[in-house]
Image 1 (cartoon, rainbow, N blue to C red):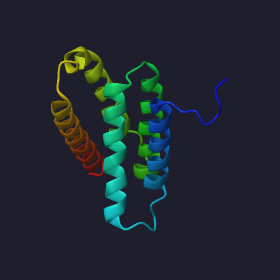
Image 2 (image 1 turned 90 degrees about the vertical axis):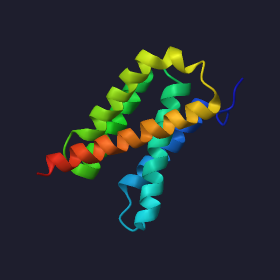
Image 3 (image 1 turned 90 degrees about the horizontal axis):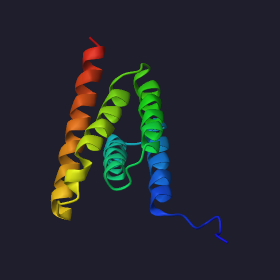
Image 4 (image 1 turned 120 degrees about the vertical axis):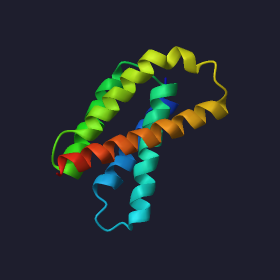
Length: 130
């Protein structure tokens, strides 16, 4: 019989995502450096989970986080939701090619995807403010 405290890595990563999400949304008194640290770490964990723990259930998780970030941070539905769902579609298409990569190349891939995600989110959110 498994205990309640027995958590696999997928559940631990989701708990970390929820913790970082809560910090990002309730960051009124945080210095901006801590806010960006949690924001970047949140995106890094999203990409990491989508590569190493890919399942169809992730579409629901990404939809929840994308929609919630858009509503809480921007007061409109848009950039986070679209970028998160496109990331999953992209990884779904190319996931079988990632198995041959070394850990260093996967880390570089995660960093590149993270930079692209944040760039598309900021660019599309600034376009909606025009």
